[in-house]
Length: 141
Image (cartoon, rainbow, N blue to C red):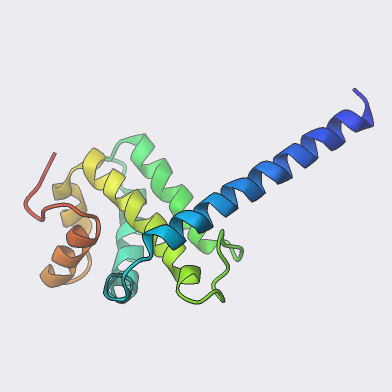
């Protein structure tokens, strides 16, 4: 294979990543997380991080759920974000949105009872988490 082939592949990957990043930024601007929702999500952050770590370590959960949670923890630990944190509102909103979207999928797949069993916070915090994930606190699948 020639050097131009690998150069074309590298350019294609960079362009694809830039387009994906731009699409995420546009989606975040269109969604415009309300200040109250973002503040509530940030207030729950320590409990949510402990919840994600506990769920990722639970061997009784399906492997796909644990892998998804491990990838989420890796993303949150990375120093580079899709939207840099110094960008007002959107810098932290992308992390909050990704965490809530992942947790919503985990809750739907693993069941609300499993998530509740690992929740380290208060009952009010759990209700807030289910509201942010747009699930009923009594819903279980």
